[in-house]
Length: 333
Image (cartoon, rainbow, N blue to C red):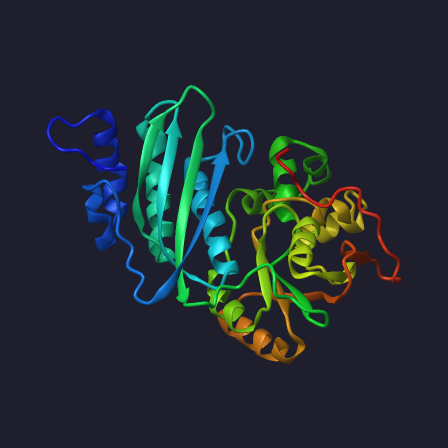
């Protein structure tokens, strides 16, 4: 995403109009160079990348401002899970055509989120494509040397915490597709709108990043489903988990659907796009973790604990019976 001088091309004009105003970091050089410079200042730089693709991660008629926010925020969620603070991002945008009616709200929302999360645009690329719209962001975060929180590191005896509520995004996608959840919420416009918003615009928990760094033994964000992502964390750490299903935090809309038996718990714990944080916290850090989460105004809930072993996570109902889950998470392949 480099602006060239002389006779500007259509791409140059697009970059200058919509994206140069977002390149506020001095290391972006106003998008006038072939690369950016990100100063480390004795810290480690965390790097993560995610792409969102039309028809896979969003629907063709999703508003462009929500696409901008989702593309950046799914990366910010990874940064938060590693205990880092945002440092900047690069953007690759593959468009079928350049239309002001789409680009203007996209760039405006992207700029707003870049400012709100202190994560400026550093550069990138814009290309044309005959295929689906694709937005790819690589984000960078900073943290003290050697302090990144990994998936590995959790120990038997640690408590398992999640932020926010689980399963809303999967329900929101069903609402937008006009599926069974939409039918079950025919008379609940507020519930439909809430769930659709949870799918379209994630809420990354960057306010909790320093708390995760200080107190979590392992962490990751929940992007492919709580059950599957917990299994990944356990496998990386060499432990097993026992989860109390009634403790899993649900939104009012999701809880009502479960109570009516319109959906089962598997829909919620195996659905993707939550972008909440999943943390293992040693017992002697739990009080401080909870206190700092309250100070950061991020809801956290203990949903179970880690035990010795290598079996998949167990999900127990209110009577202590293990639930058989046919599916653990969303998978692209």
